[in-house]
Image (cartoon, rainbow, N blue to C red):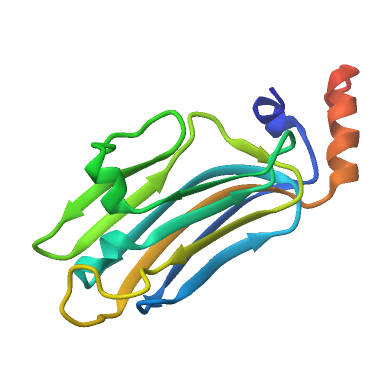
Length: 168
């Protein structure tokens, strides 16, 4: 419900970021971490350059108001289960190209997911080569969309104004 009122509220902002780099076998790369309340809207990650790219974990930690939870998947795992179309919540594979060694995993919830205190996303490469004969660097390009509540007091005040009918 609050998400639908965002155009009338203060103290929040869209946070869109893109990340590009490479990850080596056995490494973990933290793409982003936010220490504020907000909403998780979407993430999509292209992994390429090695057949082992499909074995990189896309890991999201959400400090949900009711209980914290994580989403963790690999493009390989999703593809094996046939998760190749958007689903209301969870990961899916929208690119699978073994010939060009390129794989995309995405999470696009049907509605934004709230987090109370923090949100973190990281990539975790496999500990050793899985399908390649030697360890090759894996390139990544990721896009993340969040709504950050940067001023909780202003946000609360504006919610109260809206519920009192003071829309100006």
